[in-house]
Image 1 (spheres, helix red, strand yellow):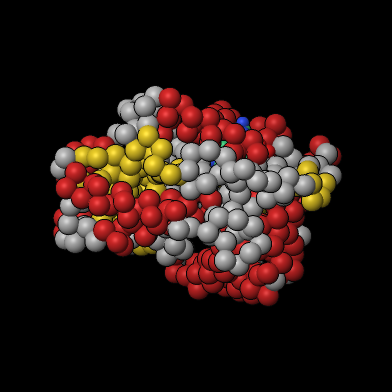
Image 2 (cartoon, helix red, strand yellow):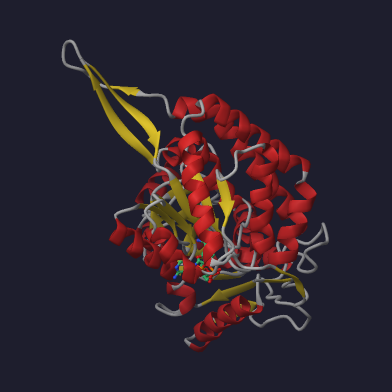
Length: 453
Ligand code: NDP
């Protein structure tokens, strides 16, 4: 497996992929490890997780550099990502026991009835490259602490990150087999998932990958959690603070080079403030610093690979051909590496890629609507349903509009973000299940009824 630096196109390293025998050995280790791990007191599992958080903090720069080299994330955002991973470790180290506390039920006389939460076993995690550390810790912190063991199949373009994450758990003192990385391509996933020792799967990535994993898991009757991207609306109402909305909107679209499932993608703007908002928004987008991702000042780095850039540009090209107007950007940058400029499209026709597909890069589509009802209608005019952001000076109005938007996470006067304290996930083709917070740790447990007389 080759790791290629998307800022230069150079190959950084080549990793030997795991053989079938390696995968079999990993499955056997996971199975063995589970028996002992599930018996470890929860308190001890929490303590180990807290150590994993310390390991992340101690090696923050090294892990951040690895992400920047392998997928082009600006270094300052890579450092923040490692810190966020340490935060999710701290969070579950502190709260797992409370989240997994047995729950009592009204019981008949003489009986004591509870739900207790027990781990399922080895969980396969198929993860993407866009937040190569965060996506993994988002599943590993809760699921391991609940007593499951983890098998990571990371995206093929971030093998160094995949290895480094396994090292974090080893360095923290996790027993052998509790967390393992499988360096395999997507063609190996079906067999691993079909193996009897694997009990469940979680996938973050594209719709096709999610459907493939869900269909095998369905065949095998194994539980899945899917987080499959979105086309989040960013709704600007006529009473919004336009400066703040424009500044936050530019960031919400272009953070991580625009390669985020919860990035603001469709800007739905009330006609009374449309011109004013668009002018400020384009100014904000143009002011972002694009360039070398190793530079601390860089805000937008390259796309994660030349192929992904080509796919994105094809979506822009098709949208423009269908009638969209380019307000800024719109062509790959004339420089070494997979750089695409922050771009804004207006007059976006219904049904073109910028309207109906996920644009996984720094390209915003703006839409003008006549009133609040039309704003809600446009926000909901998508098969996705991950996040949404609503901007208004009136909090109650914001609450009402946010309630009317079909999405897993809605924010008023704030960009959509994932936070260990708050459940995260989507509806529609954005997937199902919830990660983080209490629902996150309860996704892969046996909610066992215990009736004692
Ligand atoms: P993929 O969904 O292809 O990759 C994500 C993970 O799924 C990788 O580990 C990949 O492995 C694996 N995978 C891919 N196909 C299958 C399959 N048939 N069965 C099992 N596992 C599979 O994303 P891409 O990197 O190709 O990006 C394409 C698009 O997906 C993006 O443009 C974006 O729209 C969306 N995406 C959404 C993300 C999100 O956060 N929700 C994250 C990444 C992408 P391998 O790398 O070996 O192919």
